[in-house]
Image (cartoon, rainbow, N blue to C red):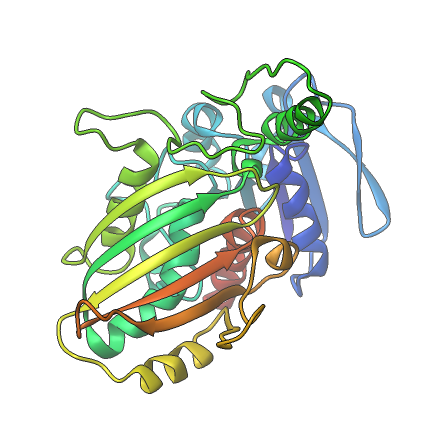
Length: 330
């Protein structure tokens, strides 16, 4: 099986290479592709150096599966023509709400892959980690409404944003003037309640994505409202989640369901440190669930804390898992 990665030199592209290296997929040839600026670089896969090819000159027929990790504009321009020669798994937002394109979380709705037309969309990073605990709980109790506040790491905005966090932090400690290029306000020692652009109703596109992707993946009847916040953390997104069911529930059954949920790991002890933080989730394939407790204001609702590495399960890992699902269905 031959694979290709478009946008191989970026954060998600490089992480995808690492995930493929650890996967059980038998890869005969891996083609790494990027912009003209990045072409010619050498990256390592399974101890072998691979020269990055230029996107404009690349032949898409060389790989059976091609993972796009290069943003919406690249996906818009190149994915449709690539899909004539290869199966495209796209990390960008461009195809997510297209009714003819399946939006897939590997553990949640793999059966949607049956109807793909050679383009499959990877959901938003914050949506993916939320779906893992919601899916089995919805199967058991039927979710009526979700209220989620996200605390999203800067790596979700790209390498330049990570560099800005580091440089701003240093400048703050050195009492130097702070310059913000990639964020609307200072990110070091601060929080920014704004991710992606604003829409007319006062929400941001990031919040809109979480609401509508949840409906497409899980159930169009579920109500969801989100507030998405950028935080001065390098990697791993965190979410404070309130879930309201249609009927009353048993908390012990909920905990057992989450313990058995694919892709999830429960760390929930009622003591100091008995929970997971973004730092601990970084580099781990699991989506971690902590602080599971009843909502005392509503006997049909509960609260939880969900943390996952946004570059892994939120991006690279899920695309590779989608590829594994496709191979199983052959």
